[in-house]
Image (cartoon, rainbow, N blue to C red):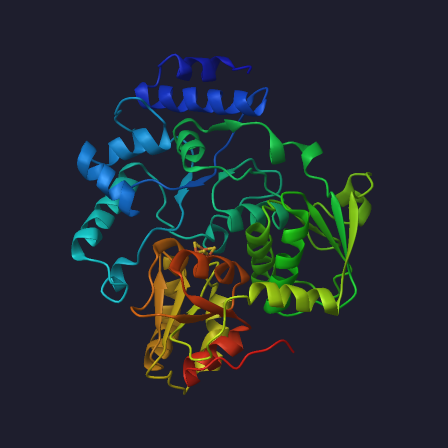
Length: 427
Ligand code: F3S
């Protein structure tokens, strides 16, 4: 791989051992991928610290968070002192919400480690956004901007909706990018790899957030890691709709980029999105396909008594909290059910100020930040059946936590929280 003088100097140790290890990792990674060079990035989203159990054990055994960064972010054979990040960097979701540790059944010892991780993140100059949706809270890359982001739902959002450029990075490459401001120039950084490969023609109107989640789930399973073009959308989709579409497509498949003719930045027309090529396949999506997707997402829900309603995957925007509050206002959730809503910390501050946090609490629910049930493995004790409005969470939660899950609209989920029973169905 070709390195410029600055990159070569980093590799030769000019900026210290941690940067040297980071550059060494990027060169090995880039060469394995066939990248010819690196590209500058000043927008990295990744994870550092140790909120997952095995990382906590590692930190305790090997003397702290630099040891964790050395091993898990730099693949370094020895422990190095980690300097401040060179690139503008943001932290993704964490393993718990320290403000609701007791409710999440997390011990005070683990909260202490979490706080140490927060201090470590601050020392490295990484923004503690602590969310899977950084684009909702100020980190909004622009079209053409080269980024190095982890988190599949965020990767597909910034590629597809914002026209920024990132591959789905791992903890290691994102950590190395933080310290160097570089990432291998391959995959979705290159124009020629961003064209649509599959064309999806809509025979029905796709309107609600639930509809977009179902469409994403259906398309992702069919195209896997290729790039779909959605054709025939009749109404401008909002941020939550595109967010749910992408999160679902990245879960049932490995989609990292998509186009919506007339709405996403690299698809002013279908021909532009296809870059002049013919699609490998044209897929039709109508009422039968929508029903099939619904049945595939709803494979685990069997018992109608719901113990837990989880909303906020990906983390809710302020608009979604506002919507949920309209449904909850003046209501009280069932004594047998818990309602947890997840959002970025910064959005919760808005919700506090707007009175939404109190409204949710008055109804018997709680607004949480920093984590989610699937990532943090945090649920009310004794949960057997959950209800979610996210196809992504319905895909992962039963597998990770061994529970049943119903997938439906936000209104159906709130209704389940109020009655303690699932009564949803495809309209
Ligand atoms: Fe976010 Fe958790 Fe879903 S991290 S995308 S809320 S699985």
